[in-house]
Length: 120
View (cartoon, rainbow, N blue to C red):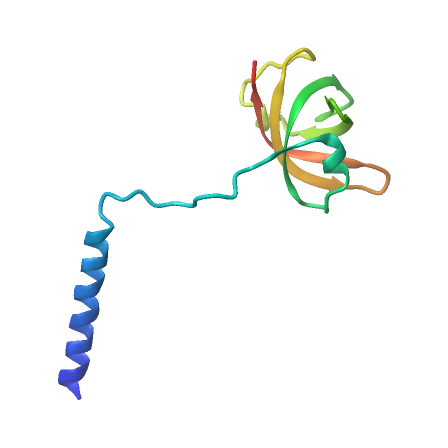
């Protein structure tokens, strides 16, 4: 019985090494499922906590970490934590891409921003 166990372990070790050797130099990772830029209109109809990408402009500040975001389909409030800016300075004429989660509140829908990128 010990011989069979030892042979099985040896086979597993060799096959694992062979598999690693076959894939050496081949980059790994996830393929497909690219993020799609959505519109404000689409975001408002999505489920709570859905991950979203939107592009447009931040047109005004509406309080502590609250901003009005606009694209060609409408406006939506976004919440951008101070640490999410990463030193960016953005004005109402700048185009931005933002990534975050849909947050349906009692009276309105917002996007809680995780990442912001200036496009121009």
